[in-house]
Amino acid sequence: MTSLPQIRIAMPEDVAVVAEFNAAMALESEAVALDKDVLTAGVAAALADAGKAFYLLALVDGNPAGQLMVTYEWSDWRNGWIWWIQSVYVLPEYRRAGVFSSLYRHLRELADARGDVHGLRLYVMRGNAGAKRTYESLGMAHSQYDMYLTEFQPAG
Image (cartoon, rainbow, N blue to C red):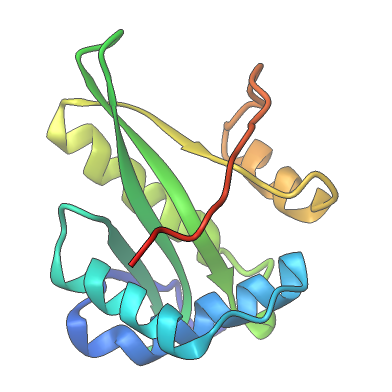
């Protein structure tokens, strides 16, 4: 990497690269092959409506090198927002080169500037020791919560 990555908010014209990064992340971290059409439609929907989510892209020498997505949780306990970091992906050739750190620091600056964001959260696969070390090196702490879920296909 010749320079620190530049970070910007992804735009609708970035749908292909964001979908590509999401597909690579799912395959690598969870051994899940995502349906390309569904994935692309989901990314396009998020890029078209910041109320759903937003993505940050890291560019190295003008080329996409990594990303993260942010979704929102309202905290009545805090009367403010929790931002959830999701869809984290860094191209293999840019790992351990400060790409995710730059994305995270930029996101933290955005959250701090708003004044109504009370925390950043993410979930990580239990066995992903490398990612956990990265998150901890940035000051994130392991949560006291376990996550439960129910997944289903909506009707229609």
